[in-house]
Image (cartoon, rainbow, N blue to C red; front, side, top):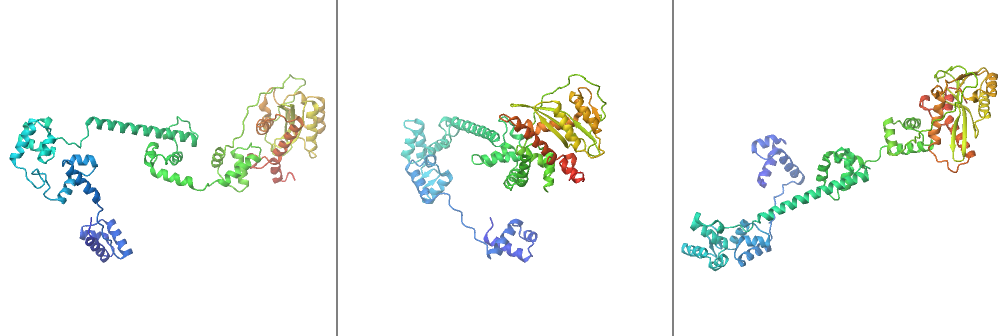
Length: 510
């Protein structure tokens, strides 16, 4: 503690030396540079340095008087006064007694009330104490001294011959057994408190971040740990929560500030949800990202994938049953001209066709489309409740009507009987089309068409409950999906465009 004169001298010397703290401290030998700059800031701000106030007394005057009166009226025993009042220390009480009357107590001579006790009186008191005709407290009270002073005289006169059992005791000491029990109780209370805190942390982890109750708290991310700390700060101290979670204090406050910041991707979240819902809830993160790019929102795939996972935007996936329609060869089959090469440099060079079945509670519906290998466009399609010749013949007639003069595509199919009947063969021959067929029972030879069916059923059929839907309404729904597929559903292989948008961009369609 520095006096006012020392502090003002240091500040003035600091100003004199041009704010050089090193020179000032080197000359005076005090204070630290930090304190010197703080004193100077106060001096510049207020024009003066405040005087140091006297320390506030620990005990009030009524407390001092109560302690002295209790000591004088209860056998003048320091330990008894401390035990009854809970204060003060023996040294402080002696100081108060000497302030009341300097001759009241002299511990070195054992004199009380200003009357020194003679050596003869001390010897007689010790003899009376050793005879044990009366209690030690009674003997001490008759002499006007405390019981401790009486035993002190005995120790002085008898020395090593004094019985250990009669030696002076400190009444302020607690019994050893009691202290041991107190320590055990305190230790158990700490363990119970820690177990309760661990239980609350696991419960909050299950409630807030959907973790199992058996999760390891140490394996949580710092952000998740911060959420748990904020949830339990009302019940536990911050330092013990951070210690239990092995979370640095700086990391906690960093993530706490990040959590309270406005959501960076709030607008993107809303756009992703809208795009997912308006596109039949069948877009994955890649196509969602392509749609966002079209809207001017350039976001990385990882961010889109994370946001979709947080919003629970999950595309439904259901395994379809295996379907076999092969019933044997009825006529010779043409060669497989495509040989699994489903790419085409222009429209109407390679067509694919097949039949798929939908089973709904109201009955069965069959779909027969023609798919163009150039961009996956469904050139034509027919729907019927019966897989007869009219289903495929009508589909082929509609597809042929879209051809320009001179266009003679290869039309590839499986080895089904629909593509060997006279009506189909006549139409193919009249239009100048080239037939191609897959190998027997080998669906990969027509993989592009099978892929169209798989996407249709995954995005449209398996994700809905068709209970109560009539066959006519179901046929309308399938027709709407295929039109959406051609006009709106984007393909990443087409640069994030739908088949018709792609053709319009190339000038192949209006």
